[in-house]
Length: 248
Ligand SMILES: [Mg+2]
Image (cartoon, rainbow, N blue to C red; front, side):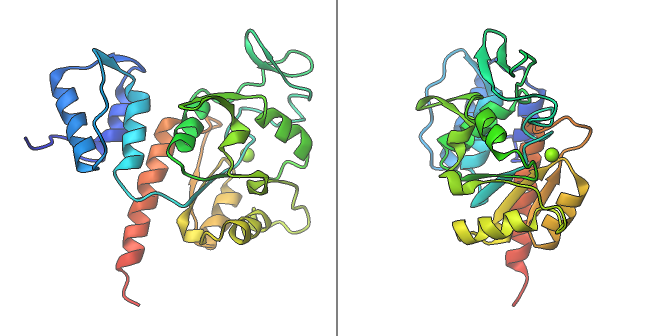
């Protein structure tokens, strides 16, 4: 049977679906087709499925992925300036992550599941922030939980190792996050064009694009969402395909 959906429908499905929704025979057949096309074993799913998780996982399985995904932190992973709007130490409380005054210090809602999905799919992640409070930022990353197939981890565990964490100011050498990216390229061996970058500040996006990285601006302080992540992933694939077609 021919698959009725196209790749671009996958993020649309993820967007339009409630987190948990009943799965009809049609949807079950379509999803199974995607798995078969990707040569991935079709998972057993019951009467309902979390499309918000399943579709993005599928999206990662059915195409080429960036070799490194780089995230800004403040107003990208969480809705505040770490160590300015919220103050260390951070704790897990009944209502979520809180700071020293019990102010909320939670990430944007989709962030833990996005990073857990990348972790589960073996896609390396780096953090690049111009926040100078490196210790406070690291503490928050090690406090925010994410649920992976290996059990509960923290956002810090998404990093291959601590060398992929770059939080420092670049005052006086203000060309976006050039210093951070230079270090990341040296450490990872990944070319800029094989990276995908998310940030909430236009100037950081501008300089990242100039160096050849696909960079996605997260506007209106809405932070990283599944929608923006998937749009970024598909945009990266489109740009990369175009690049490989250019004759040398
Ligand atoms: Mg930011």
